[in-house]
Image (cartoon, rainbow, N blue to C red; front, side, top):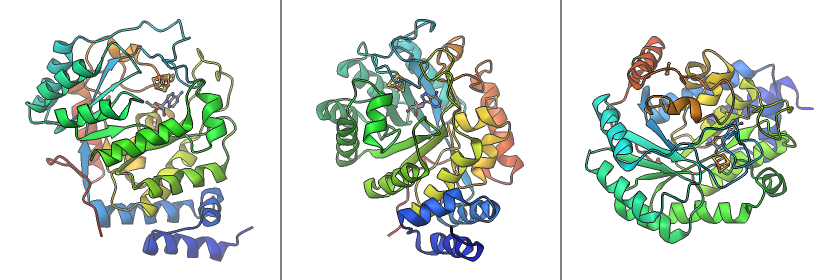
Length: 348
Ligand code: 5AD
Ligand code: SF4
Ligand code: FES
């Protein structure tokens, strides 16, 4: 066991050098006594490297149709209880236009792995949204390199694809029919094509260990990811993992805070899943290392239908309401909403 003095030394080391060994990461993630000091260190590093501004990214969930069957996810193809939808191109562009009118500088185009949106369709959407002066993040899953390249050439700036877990065996158990090596190939292609690369992990999936979470964080560093989204696994009753325990808010924010300490200049969202577990989840996350929020700009009944997990926040709220709500929360903790695109400013 690591003693008290060691934990405080490790927090200092992480704050000053942004380097820790796997064993040191495990010691810090396991400690509960000095959690407040650990979070305060992550908050200081956040302020020093990325400042007090919070970047908002407007999230458009444009299709909940997915050919994959991830055991943890409510949108998995075997879940027959989901009402499936697919927005048409004009509706997607319309939502992006509304996002600009709410003052968002980025939209995130997210969907299940829905083959209807072939490369030409996505390129059309990306080009049209680009004309609105928005930065574009795409999050539509695993694709061949040529497809990523076409998105990039059409004007996409960023790509989100969580590794979910760096434990290959666990990944392939929870994501049947998918290959962990192919997922890493996707991340490498995305990086090489000049996107800002976003990845991340789930915390609390069955079979995951603290050691494995430490590997996740070291993997983020090795990939030189530009954005990392960490969220608790929340069991969905309509999936094979319905009876599992799920992740906790505290451990999820610890993994997030550790990510801030070791990758100090990247963008880190206060994730929706965190707020689904804790009523002040996003504000607390912003005070434990996060500097981004991704409010939903999808309108109407679609929000209720994009249910990855139960208890998802904002499913009955409008984009206008969420914009006001999140601004109030950010200002309530003495921070400001950024007016810039919020690309990563890499430190040497
Ligand atoms: N709980 C929390 N997050 C989930 N995701 C999928 N299912 C769940 C769940 N049950 C996350 C995955 C995916 C992202 C879009 O949503 O990490 O990458
Ligand atoms: Fe599909 Fe993504 Fe859900 Fe897996 S996590 S089933 S790929 S939407
Ligand atoms: Fe949607 Fe607060 S951000 S209701």
